[in-house]
Image (cartoon, rainbow, N blue to C red):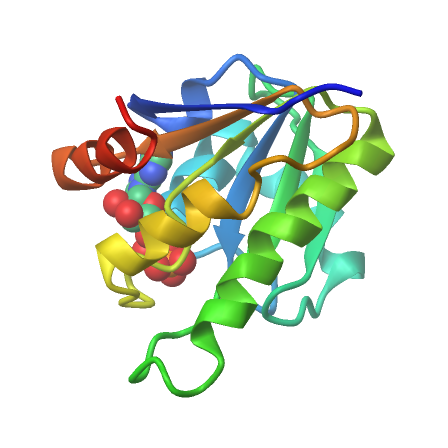
Length: 168
Ligand code: ADP
């Protein structure tokens, strides 16, 4: 059995040379702003939109895969994070499900390396530290074929949190 290596980098998820990148999508899988917009532009907006259409809607905490098109990654795993309200509406459970389900889908695809953005920490307003704790904790010790989980921070604050929580 493999152990999953979890690492953090500061960078742009669209440039990651991994088997699958995770997209912080919306329920309609229709593309949007933030990391979703960046992934759609880099992959090829028209192709990706067409690939997403038959997969929608995607419920919060669930995940669905498309090809990566023009990305270095072979697949994009679209997951829908929770909109953060006050932490008492099951947000932590839904966010953990995003990481869990994305890894399950990655396994089904045979992906060995998977890059995640900091799901829900942009427009969906999830507090960065709590989200980072879930991002670091959920993939830990997971059996399966995924050997590398790369947490991609787009800002220094998130990157510092990942380093701290990973014991780096
Ligand atoms: P959500 O709606 O799930 O909050 P956002 O796209 O608004 O999604 O933000 C999620 C996180 O993705 C934020 O921390 C944001 O800074 C980050 N982000 C935005 N663009 C990129 C990118 N190109 N690569 C990696 N992370 C990104």
